[in-house]
Amino acid sequence: MTSATAQPNDPGESTESAEDRVRIFDTTLRDGEQAPGFSMDRRAKLCMAQALESLGVDVLEAGFPQASPDDFAAVEEIARSLRNTTVCALARCQTGDIDTSARALERAHRSRIHLFLSTSPLHREHKLGMSKQQVLDTAVASILHARKYCADVEFSAEDALRTEPEFLVEVFSAAIAAGATTVNVPDTVGYTTPSEIYELFTYLRQHVRDAHKAVFSSHCHDDLGMAVANSLAAVSGGARQVECTINGIGERAGNAALEEIVMALKVRAPRFGLRTNIDTHKLYPTSRLLSQVTGQAVQRNKAVVGDNAFAHESGIHQHGMLKHRNTYEIMRPEDVGIAETTLVLGKHSGRHALRQRLEALGHKLDDEAMDSVFKRFKALADRKRDIRDEDLEALALGQDPDATGPWHLTHLNTSSHLGSNATAAVKLRHDDGREVGEAAIGDGPVDAVLRAIERATGTDMELTGFHVRAISEGGDAQGQAQLTARHAQREWNGSSVSTDIIEATAHAALAIINRIERQVPKQHPQHSFTAERSHGGLHPDRRAHGRVQQETSA
Ligand code: KIV
Ligand code: ZN
Image (cartoon, rainbow, N blue to C red; front, side):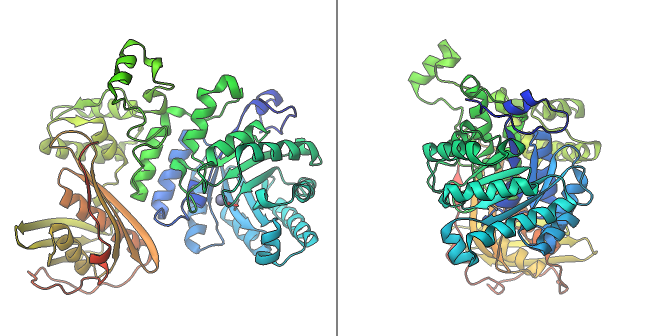
């Protein structure tokens, strides 16, 4: 189902291969990151950006530089760091936005400015207060302005799926004439269906003037659960760029999931006749990395990367699988980077074996990162007999809590007794040299630890989500604690892994406080390490929102 008309080439790519290829435009760090609960700090964004480049995404939307100085800095840092992937910055059709995006992209090896403007009647009337002609003029003027900075300009007609198709033809024809090299057709509110979007792309590709001069792109949201199906239908209708996110994160119900689109194109290659540049073996590690840096677990039954995606529990399925894998398996776990063996290393394993195994799992570490992982591997091996692949992944993906700072946990002591309150004592070290100790009592050891940490750091947060799950099997499995909290009207996430779930919780809470402090620096009062017997310092809402969900199987 390839389209009849060739689409423009990337430098060095032949017309024939450009036609066969679907460009993957990843917006995990922009549309994904702006969803509540998925915010990432600059360090996390850079780490994700590097993983996405190594995954093979063609374009990476790094942020919306005009939105905040932090967004600007993240885009600038990513632009400087990536070599092969095109780094893209989002801008409204306003001169100030375009100038700011261009500045953020100045040091990029390959850059794109992504302009968006609403085109639907609803948005024209109620959001913009613009006539059709004003929308057209604004789009054209903005594209011309952006082209002064950048040869690669994308124009998005926001709410395209609720726009009159004839007007979309006018807008995209004018956009291409003004120099847009990609025209994007967003289903902003997740409203369309596969047959409808297929027809729209077919119509646009036939009627837009000089359609062959631009790449047509889809951008689908998942409000009705059809984002991936709609993206694939758009591809069948001629889209040669798909905008998507890892794990399908994004506004409201999310964006189309990158891993699902890529694997659908690969598994059903004979039907689509199209390819992507994605190294599918890195899909699973990238998905895990995102889960780690956002502190949000992937649902178990998530297609392609969920824990159950390749589990065959039913006897009939297992029987079939033993006779011939293909009876119930359309892709292999190793195709997406899930390792075949899980039991690997132990106390006596050396650095070389660890590096080899990590590389087989898709984690290439430089010497400094390897030193840190090896140190934590040895510490873990002292506490846990069998080190499984899941444990190694957690070590490789997990930031060393002592390396991120500014706060570091140096001491933790908790006790709980049936029928009475729990107590916790913590000692923390700050990068500025302060040593702070606090103690607190709470409704359980977790509550007590969180209160003690809040007091020691002087940072209040309202806990809004708390999940603990075992990351592998067995009684000595490591537990991952994932916390979400509100502070300064924002959601913050933190996660950590340990054989001791209270310790994991303490590190996860500290990860949140470190994120807050790195972005909202402040002066801390001096504290001393004293035993406490009161509930002072408790955020009033914590008890109402705190929730523990203990999962026992991996
Ligand atoms: O959903 C949408 O319309 C967008 C645009 C900015 C492309 O995210
Ligand atoms: Zn969107």
